[in-house]
Length: 213
Ligand code: SAM
Image (cartoon, rainbow, N blue to C red):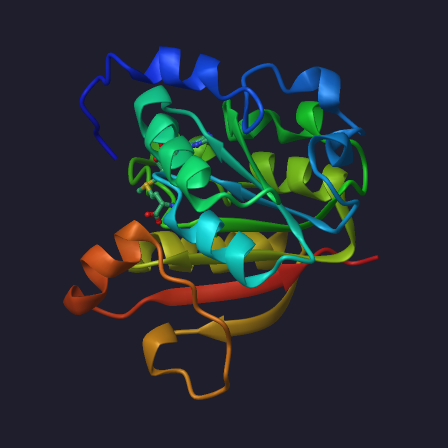
């Protein structure tokens, strides 16, 4: 996602430290202190402009949510949405998701969402894919037993790579959707910005998996 530099972003983030964390490491193991209620914690990595995480927080008031995004201009847009929502079960973190194991303690996280992650198509960039073994090992470090990793994308190449990467890790695949919008099994689909933009061009793929105990 390329976004123009937003001159207001830094100041706006500084004005909303109640919703936005820029130094996450000290909160490792203590994230519940950022929320009014102690509830299962769900994390989205690459949260973009926040549409998915805000709607999830609205639908699931009995869960706490954290959106992680690496680009300041993008997370500042998500912050606007969070502030406007008035929801208190959502926090944003401006950082690189590769370091999740330095941000969260073992078993602190109940579930992880990856939505329309950057595909990094070149072989030399495989390690940057959010479903590469490097990232999966970090997710395993922080996830509760049977905690779910949910990944959806419109990119068939990245999806095929991810199915293989998750299976080989090994993770246990609970469900695979080759056309999520045609699903009739009642699976929840909260649409992201990218999903709305690209779903008319082809199917949306999804996999839900967990680590073995
Ligand atoms: N999830 C949103 C959606 O579905 O509309 C945004 C998708 S966009 C293609 C991918 C987003 O992931 C970008 O905003 C990018 O900055 C962010 N991102 C990529 N790598 C990341 C990383 N290592 N840590 C945190 N965010 C990352």
